[in-house]
Image 1 (cartoon, rainbow, N blue to C red):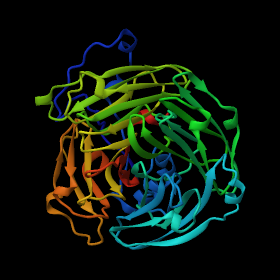
Image 2 (cartoon, rainbow, N blue to C red):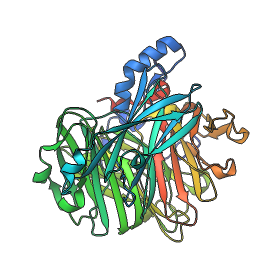
Image 3 (cartoon, rainbow, N blue to C red):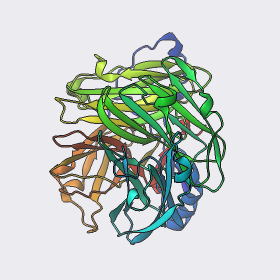
Image 4 (cartoon, one colour):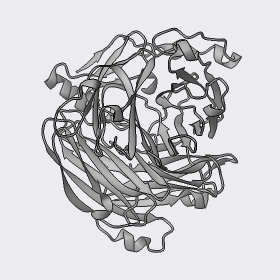
Length: 528
């Protein structure tokens, strides 16, 4: 059942609902319509009437999942997920594992179909292409999770997976690990004809791979273009590039668009749909680390970033990519923890030229105090949607060492799931809950471990997330688990992000949670 909720003004505060002083903008920004400055009308897909709600939620599922990974509604006959980026040999740079979380009351058996692929320039590509997909069942108990290393099912230079499970509310993430680190993030809940990546690097001490996964029988034909420090690039090898049906192809961007510190990319299908992941390896440039992440299937005018850190040894950057034909004008709004003590931050105004990117290094901004954590909202003011990713680099003396690349969330929701996590003696996990609304007041949340027991942790059962603010929970203070999936439910719409860090070593990950479709809130700015 689709119902209209009261309008939810997005925060123009520094936290806990206190109005932030707005200052005059540059003349080009003064005439921005007020509807873009702070009002968010929402459509909510709720399940108050279960049968009617389920039917409506199923009908809206495709639209929801076109924005970001979203779990299929509870009334769905099945859930399908696509995990593209990862390797399937013992010496691969990003060994690929899928993790399936089941927050429902019934055990499910998922079917994991693994597809083989290699780099497009590999002389053995034809031989690898002859390997047929291999399917394997994966039992996932109720209120629990299960994982599968794809290389154990099918060994190949690159392996992707299609995960199918009966019913809705199932969530799939994937983990990659290699010599330079590890990363975790959501898989795709839908294929798309377009994917956009704001972040990337082909520096000599970095390698960027675009992994294109076509799980469908028919070939997909795509055009791949880039924005670099030297301008727009449309390499001939990627003009009308064919991704065969049922295949995985990894493109070594570093070999075609070489020696650029920053590279943004668009993958646009002339025919067909597919899934596009980026594998980014840093081996000295800006530090060392490994990151995997989906492209953004749609450009956005409003994005939420729950977790930011400004500390010694940490570098935080926002990459904004505008593939359109006219400039994009936007602001990055920063919301400091405890603004009564730490003060308030004036937004960072940004203009991104057509077919270009723009980098904002927050750790170099005097207006962002060192050592103070924060959230951010990116808000476009002139109707030109963009792709935005947040980069975080950690090195000594920071306890978090590695690299994380995180897209913003275009959606809010009352319920989120994190499939893959760990809070143990070797891995630390924190979860950040960001409540960007004002009029709805405090959002009360509970964090439930999906460990098969169905038992809640009392200290995680009544958490307060202030209006216009956030709450970060260090799970090691409450749990000790090497296999930790989480179900998070709030009384008001929030955004959820997880941070994983290897204690005493290199390995850092930041990733958004996956919202459940029945509680999605969609800002109208994203509908066009």
